[in-house]
Structures are given as structure tokens and as C-alpha cells.
Image (cartoon, rainbow, N blue to C red; front, side, top):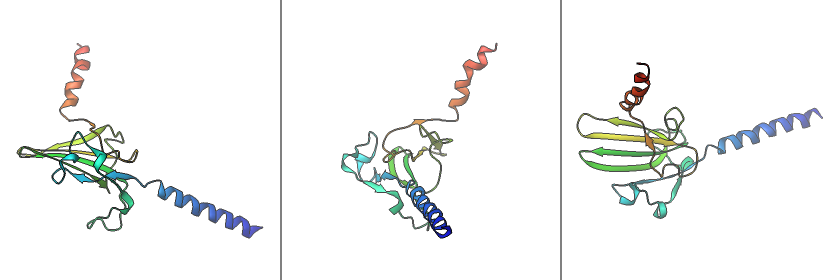
Length: 148
């Protein structure tokens, strides 16, 4: 009887670990607009296949598993490029809210928007709402003026 209980507990833990590990698997769109213009926005996903992210490998992040989708939109010297793929690092959206993307600007005509998600397969397909740091003070003006 004691053997059966240990076997049952061990089997249950093993099955639970297998189930939990497979729930992180996600499929993402994988393309570059400099190779195929249909990868840009608006995104035409009818001609692309999704990549199963646990099979996505990196030369630099050996041993890590891709668990997120990402979309990068960048402008360098006036030329827009879009990159969609699986991602290894980061968190979905800003503070977990996938509706928002990180935006960065460079010193000379360089702009980048970086979006990550893991809510569903192919979540790196559509445009997202962006939040910029200069927008926050502007949004606060009505609340500040209300006090006066």
C-alpha cells in the first residue's frame, strides 16, 4: 500500500511537471520586412507560417527556450523595417500589459518600437498602442489644472 501511494505521488508530480512545461510553448510569426515587404504593417499573414518557439534556437543564448513573441519596428535614416520572431528574454508588454510597447529613439534619425507578448499564438501580428515618456506629463495636465 505504501509503495502504491509513493508511486501515485511521484507519477502525479511528473505529469504535472510535463504539463506545466508544455504550457509555455507558443507559436509566433517569423519574418523580416527587408526580405519580404508583406511582413510590414499592415501585416499580411496569409503567406507566412508560424514558428514553434521551443524549436527556435539562438547561437548566443545556448540552453534557453524562447517563450515570447516579439515585433520590432525600427526606422534608421528614414527607412522603416519590421522584424517578427520568437523571443527569449523580456516580459510581455509594459508591466505585463501587452497593449503597450517600449519605444526608443537614437541620436540621429533612429527610432525603435519593441513589442513582446505571450498571450496567444501569433500575438506578434498586429499593431499595438505605444506609450512614450513625453506623453505622460501631457496626460497629467488636466489633473494638475483641476486643482487650480
